[in-house]
Structure formats: C-alpha cells, structure tokens
Length: 437
Image (cartoon, rainbow, N blue to C red):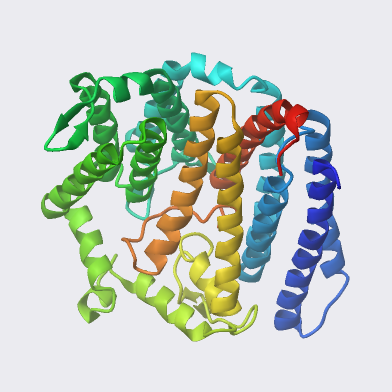
C-alpha cells in the first residue's frame, strides 16, 4: 500500500492537471487559442500545492491523506472560475492562497498540542464576541450586513475567524459538561430536557445568534453558528430532544424578528417571491436571486461552457456579486448540472473525511472540535448553495475555497490545519493497532 503522504501527493497530480485544463478552457473561450499561460498557471498552482504537501510530510506525517488534495481541488476550481470572471481578481485570489498557506503552516506549528485551545476557551470566546461586534462598531457594511473592517485599502471580515473561535469554545464547554447534561436531565411527557443550569448557556448562545441576525444582519453566520452548536450538542449527549428544543428556539427567533425587524422581513419576502416583478425591480430586491436562477437554468445538464455565460453588458453586471455570493450560480450555468453535482460531491467527500477524523479522535475535546469544524464547513456550503437555489434566504456567505475573498480562504485554511492536527494525533495512536484509511 502507498503511504498516507504518497497518496496525498498522488492526489495532487490530477488536481494540477484539471486546473491547467480549466485555464485552457477559459483561454479558448476568451481568445480562441491556448498559449503557454495555461501550462504556466497550472505549474504555479502545482508548486504552491507541493509546498503545502512537503510541509505536511514534515510536520503531520500521519494526517488524513485526502483532506489536502480535496482542498487543493476546490481552490483550483475557485481560481479558474474567478479567472474567468476577472484575471485581476484571480491574481489577488492567488496571493490570498499563498497567505492562507502561510496561515495553515503557522497554525500547525503554534497549535501542535490541540488541548491548548481547550485551556483558553473563555479567552477565545471573548475574542470571538469582540470580532463579531467590530464591524457593527466600525460600520463595515457589505450588502446591508455588518461584516467587514476597513483598514486603509484593505478589508477583513472578522466573522470568518470568529466562527472558528466559537466552535472551539462550544467544543471545550460541551466536553466538560456533557456528563452532566446526560446524567442530570429531566424528562417530561417522555421528552428529555437538559438540567436547568444548562439553559443559561443555551440562551446565551441563542442570544448571540439573534445578535448576528438583528444587529449584524448576518443570517448566514447565525445559521452556521447555531447549527454547529446543535450538531455538537447532539454528538456530546446523543439526545435528539435537545436539538429539537434548540431548533425551535432559533425558528421562533427568526419568525419573530422577520415580522418585527424590517431588513429581516425584506429578506424573507425576497426568498418567498424572487420572481415577483415588484421585488425584482425594487432597489435591494430579488434581482440578484432571480438572475442566479436564470443563469443556472440556462446551463442545462451539460452547461454552456467556460466563459460562455453572459455576466455583464458593457460595464453593467447582469449577475451581481458574481465572484462571491453568485459564483455557484455562474459555475452551474457554465458546467451544468453535471458540474454542479461534481462540485457538491467534492464537498461531501471533504465532509466525510472531517467526520472520519472526529470518529477516530481519542479525547472528547478533539472529537467535538473536529465535528464542529466539519459542520461549520458543511453549513457554509449549505447556506450559500441553499440561498442561490432559494432553499433558504440568500446571505452573504462565501462558498468555501471557491468564492473570491481573502478572509474566507485564510479562515478555511486554518480550519483545515486544525482538522489535520487532530487527524495526525489520532492516526499516529492508531498506527500500532492496524491503522486507519
């Protein structure tokens, strides 16, 4: 059998070839010819991936062999799609990819012992709350939501880092209290309820989700945050009734504020009636969602081909925020239903490897942390894909590794680093008893 690292290296080869082929497709559509830029871009991407691979081989020799190639394939799809939109944006995204790789390496070096995060859980939680509130205090509005901090020419979305910090705190808290939640639960009408002392933390977490919804106007982060909490709560206790109770609290809060807070009610109306002519032509209305639906339907089963979808007429965008919120709609329109399914399958395999890491983790905190990180990643995909396809209201969440955005790719590489540290520790311990796949 190939070693884990050799399997990882072997997986990077088709990723680089597919990325080069993607650049070739874009160049053919744009210039009707292929030049040496195709090979150059593909080779540069492979070199960057190999740098990460050599670092993993050095510092994490027993880590999961599939997480990194899957990450590289998603990042390759993202850079090619962004290059199709705007070569300058693709150059910036490639720079952020390098910065994200550096953040990945720094996280592995600094957090080699994952238990250090558990010891500083309250400091991490306070830091997360400060990060969440900073955009509101500084007025960093993005499409009506308080998401970013502007520092000179640079902008940063602290919610991307805050979501990781919140997951770390919840995992540490539940690792400490899960025994109490199970042994001291109360039953009423055959339904299990957590002890009264636990309602305080649950209400605090619910209140933070509502703060994101009302004051920060970030429905996507609220869904990811509270969804990850419910997933960890179920894994820690095995009690479905706790999840149902938490879900009911969130739905109640959303329904209440959608009737009383104007911007939430507007989001709900756009979601319910995206093709309504009045909403379609209204300022801040359903134009973006409707155009995304038109773009996806235009692709059909096999897609219109890279570079073939119409995203601008002159200088006016037909598909707003195409490099961020609507990039899934563009990819689906040009790669078709087959391409969209392939992209979602990559995400599903990534999620499977994350949950595999959680299953083999030895201690409760590592197990819960891997689960939480994986669910945050999965919910991020669900929120943006569900928003574009009108399964849920559209929010300003990026599609991991595919959408344009420096904060997003850096935060997700940190997430990858934490998962791989947990995986390396667990697999090293399991190596003596037959190993894991």
